[in-house]
Length: 405
Image 1 (cartoon, rainbow, N blue to C red):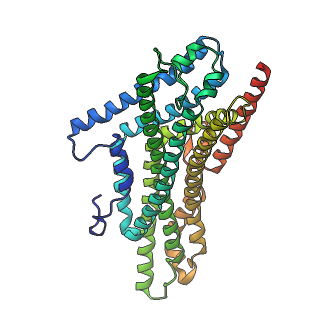
Image 2 (image 1 turned 135 degrees about the vertical axis):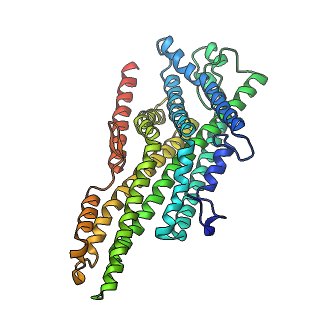
């Protein structure tokens, strides 16, 4: 749907689409369709190529029979984060048009709630986005700087000259390069590539997560307003026939509003389903490994701070998704409560609308559950399950590490 006259100068999620264009993940208005395709897919290809040294570090450890557990675990953190990011990347590339349509479809709700509610919600999303991205930029910057400050202790902990040459100290992640990358211009080149790759990957994944959260916030705001309208739809009803007819039309209008929100929510979740399934499925493994690295006696203080920053960021992102998913579920149910609180019993209006009342009340009793395959609905319960699974794997890692020592 085209934006209203009131909203021509205010584009929903403008900041997010501009940042996606800056990261070369979203079509640019200045490029042709063909050039956009080459730029976006070329960026994806380069991104995958830059991730190969991290995967090689994991593969090498398994090849030699895991002669350095800490190296393996640190490389696994990178691999798991890259997998989540790449799956999200592919989801955005595959469903660009659908995502843009879901953004544009928010304007459909203007006829139900007016433009101010949508604008206010979008401004809240922008503030949340800025806070998260500032945290990500600060965290990535510290992750790039601290390894450079602890090169001596890193070199002392390496088991052989081979690791020093092919997995040089000072890099933000564990790698395995096919050549000596520890000296001079070669080190500077690979460090620059890794720095750009880290910023790009972390910013994109955080931005993609906030975009999903933004849709959840828009849905939640619409549901709250819909519940408010349902609760007060019968306030002005009187014995006048025209009044009853007017209320009846308004109630039917609200039913269409509720159906529109439900359909919009279904479409939105259908776009992000794969991303959320992989995100939830991998998060527990990532958190467990990061937690182990924090408490490991072989981890230096600088790395502990780096891992703590990463742990806090991942937990906050995952909690935000679960929290707003829970909020959408609760707001759907609250519509039924709002109808019950309304003055539906006044002046026999319930007799005229009994079928509509029954349909809406029945529909809202079960709410809306986005079912994550093998994990259940997206809610705070899933958050607690993932945290529990992460703790179990964390305890298992501690046991295995103690047995090997």
